[in-house]
Length: 143
Image 1: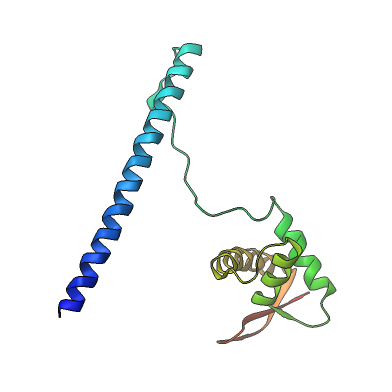
Image 2: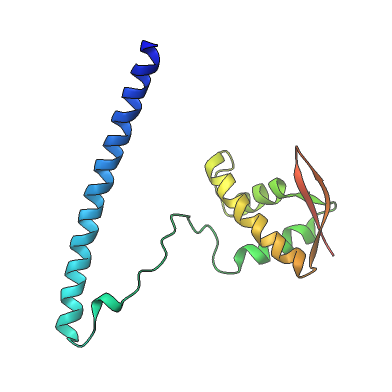
């Protein structure tokens, strides 16, 4: 029982430290926004700052330029002599982009993005799912 309490205390301390870190970062961002607001107002006092909508934030890294993954996926499938799994496609594209295929967090992030792109291609009837299993997931080929 004491072991559980000890782990909970440790986890609480970690989360509290993370919270304090993010609160400090929020304060820094608010100061930067305030400075930008002053600059905007210096150039044009008619702009109503409260009407400027916030952009959606994404912490996802962009590993590919716009449209690059589309081209690379199709090129990879075109050169393949057999259907490829989503994982195989992901690892091939990572190799071509010189990204570490051993970084599982990166692999998962890229694979999720590529799966979304492959599904778009499937709807457009440029690729099709050849098979699906619980171990390898989807296998793809060009139509």
